Image 1 (cartoon, rainbow, N blue to C red):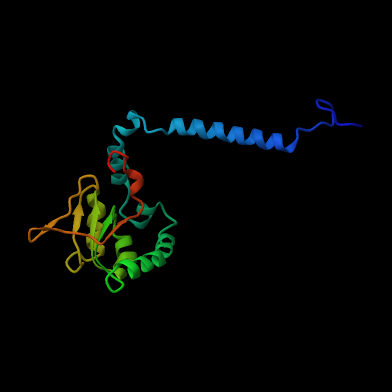
Image 2: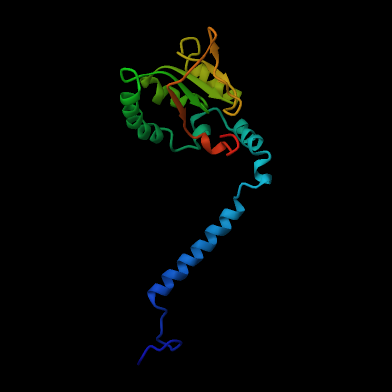
Length: 182
């Protein structure tokens, strides 16, 4: 029996199957890209939709992370932050950090605090910032609590000088910023 094209024993050569699979994957990717393109319709209302989402989320670790990553991201980031502090910090520490999209202060407390003398928290959702103030003990926390969006943020002025940061930490937040905001 000879396997002739179109015959009962004939099979498409492997390289042709691979080529067809790649073409199919490319078409699916192209279709997905057009569906999720940054059209004006998507851009309009982008921030309000995100703020609506976060205003509905609870001021808990599960609410901030979606559950399941609370310790993993901290463990993953700690060695990188330690290396960065040793190379760029002052005596292995940063003088002042800004935690952008700080939520309830989980990252500031467990990741940034050991490496920073002062940490300012910037969070646009007031109930999350209130939870951070309570959990981090606002009166003794070395830094400010600011309820504002990153797009509208201006560093505070102290004694006529705009505050500067030697570390700006943006974890789980840049995906909510449009190209126009950047």
